[in-house]
Length: 114
Image 1 (cartoon, rainbow, N blue to C red):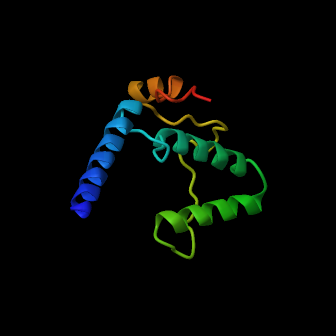
Image 2: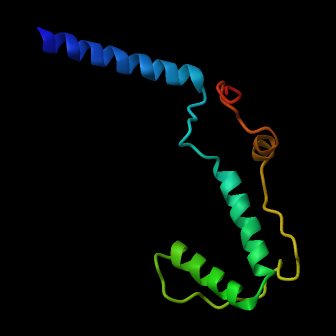
């Protein structure tokens, strides 16, 4: 009898926790979720800063980036000039929706609680 009550109590409490999480963050975003556009923009700015720095940083950045993307290849492909080669600041293309999200990021209902 005690195991039945403990099991029922555990199921009910976990259900209440799920409902509370939904009420606190109705968009499904919690502390573990991230906005991928912000991550991409940050990495793009970091890459731009490193690219404007020394040549050794450029080589390390390109090699590391290609190793990650291409599944740990040991060498980066040859760098060729493209349309954006001479531009110092390259803005990433955003949709209207992603621009709106960047200007007003979603804040959960508990954001201002201290």
